Length: 341
Image (cartoon, rainbow, N blue to C red; front, side, top):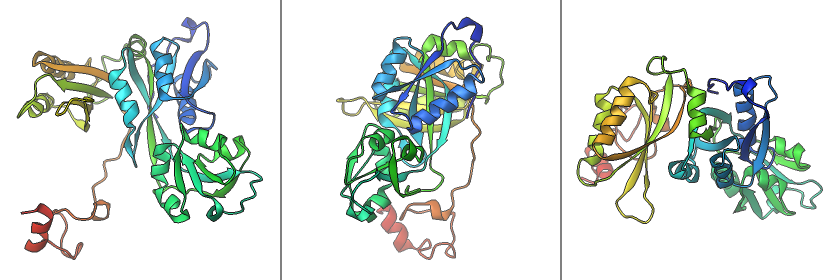
């Protein structure tokens, strides 16, 4: 869990509203609770409000009604693309903290359901990311996936003859019978969440941190080159490289309905008020790029493990593994097959 400077409790006459994807018991609910404990410790200064959708969370924050918490990135399924797109498009939102939550799924049915075992069920319901993270279990049990607004909503609304996948707490919250525990495909699954506010409020929470040295913060920045063609993206990345900035993530999203046009999202080990990063952003703007800061938060601790042979997908070529580690070795026939030349 990253922390951020706390707002002055004396300046608040009412609890901070914290909007999350409901209902109660969702992973986002857990992230919202963790955020409140870290950012408003011991104050009782928050009111958690369940919302039906991420767009409802964004609308509440845009209107100035407190904070919002949204899922951002899973270490199994990657970025939560609808939330990423919503942050790019948001008129007046920025994130100022980041919260990580371990992810494990149990399988439930309605307590008292006449069906006695998972093999008798026909459907399984969860959030689309939850369904993807439990694909092995779903396939083994021969279940038909039915997407839900959230994992907790799937548990709350589970119907007779249906399996719901969700956090363990949902069993007791919604009076469900547990069919199986920890049915996710990968142990160690984790999802990162962003805590958002209006842009001026986010800046206030981070105010006074300008004196921190480079590397104390992470920033998520979106940019769009206004011209397209060979070398445009390379030129933009050269600006970050020449400034000596460490980029830990880089992805693209299409500008919807316009072939060949993209927005690019980079995560940088720096804050935009720090000199090197500020100058780099000014240079990109001067070159004609559209630039927007989506999030700034204290840099979280993260591992930097090596990539080992067992992590790699099937196929592909690397000189980093010897024949003893991979009996396919680096034969000419194998290299030719994988590289198509």
